[in-house]
Length: 237
Image (cartoon, rainbow, N blue to C red; front, side):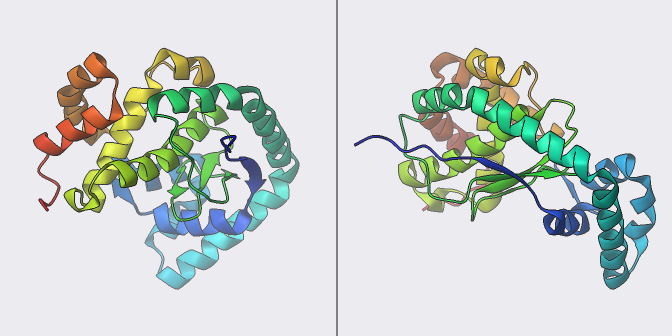
């Protein structure tokens, strides 16, 4: 039976941009201030940060509507370019993921990349969709590869490990660490053209502890087993 790989579609979603901005404009995590990232590119949204929840929603909605109205052609052009870039690299991407994830079957989902006017780049595990900032300094492929790896990783770990050993937070940290190590590998760098993958600043200590294990084996299961031994953020079964 031939293995089926997901078909990633590239779309715009104005309403999702409104929701993401609303959720992230006052949000910080592991050393990253997402709100600052939003207002740096969209300074007119600075006032929305201190509004009531209702007024904040109205302000963001109005701003996003105007931005899309003024920049729709450019957004659509960026979407076409992203589609071409993914088509160019997708076969290599799936070949490499087969190598590191033992040809694990991809979980079912929508697999849609929504170009966004905000540099937040969230992913949604429940339906396998994610956002990519339309002017991301590292380009579409860097973000797309990162998020697609998350979808495969979570499903792979759910099959290979007892989920009771993880908290949501410890599993999230591991997902970011695995992505970081994978994106440092030469095969992925050929796709992303990014030898210095991003990392949440507060995870750098864990990278230092795990790097020797990854470099020795380049094995996700072995790294995960070691991770569970050294971190305090999980519950013993």
